[in-house]
Amino acid sequence: VQLQASGGGLVQAGGSLGLSCAISGSISSIIYMDWYRQTPGKERAFVARISTRDEKNYADPVKGRFTISRDDAKNTVSLQMNSLNPEDTAVYYCSARSRSQRYWGQGTLVTVSS
Image (tube, rainbow, N blue to C red; front, side, top):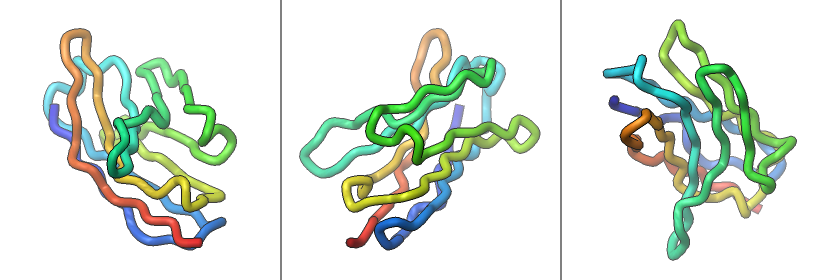
């Protein structure tokens, strides 16, 4: 499984940004897709998850502001981020989980200015 994240950038506090993750390879092996984020000096933190049954989970800090979605026709998973604040500044990673392995894409930087 290969993952390619895109869509990061600079946005002002209160603004919105959308991230996309293109998926290729053994897509049928994937059980769920996640978004994680990481800031310097901190561990990578869970942000959101979507399963093959379209079940969604969110980390508490982003509930009500972020929305994860899938487009199976395009083999993409997206993360729509609204009401962004400076604490959302991080490198965002998409990740795929199969029964035996977790895959990571390269990160995309999101910077929220105050």
